Image (cartoon, rainbow, N blue to C red; front, side, top):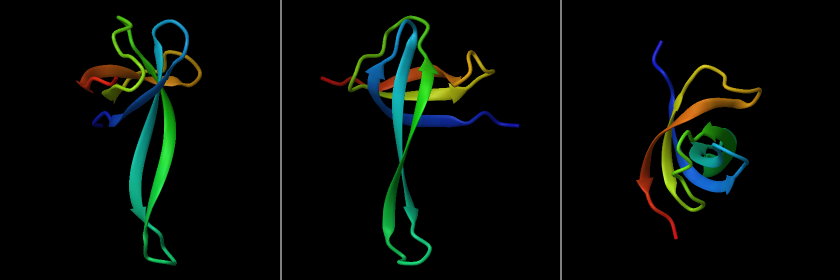
Length: 81
């Protein structure tokens, strides 16, 4: 089974080696037929503490590292402020 890859913006550095990533998707609303934004937050393992708040990052699915952390930082796509 292929591993999921998510792309989102770092909104918070949560403790050591962990970042909080906000992923935004655009979906079609079933009733009103309009495009709606949906958001979800993921905890991502950042082994070298290289991502900062505002960066756009890519993360790949991994075995569970803790209760809510099952993604590992793949690469930093764009540096923030």
